[in-house]
Length: 122
Image 1 (cartoon, rainbow, N blue to C red):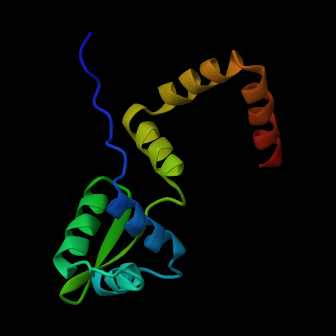
Image 2: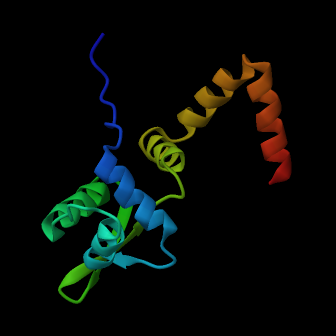
């Protein structure tokens, strides 16, 4: 059986950048994210470091970006990593994902009850 590709978990800096985007009330420039991250750091991060991380998060579908003058504004694509992962799986595998998910949940009574409650709330 071949190896399955998995999205690498976020590293500490990627996590900090995503946290800054989640906390922001509006799309952020690289400079704004850099200022947030450097606020309490003894060794400040470089602008290019944060720019690279934001670009890579955008390529991975965790952040979105739009042109803003000569740079970009960034924001979180989803409200959490779990939501981003679910979106990615649905985009890649469509309706088969839902059927498989329901099959997996149906064997665990607690998960099945939770799913029923969540569907009932929406």
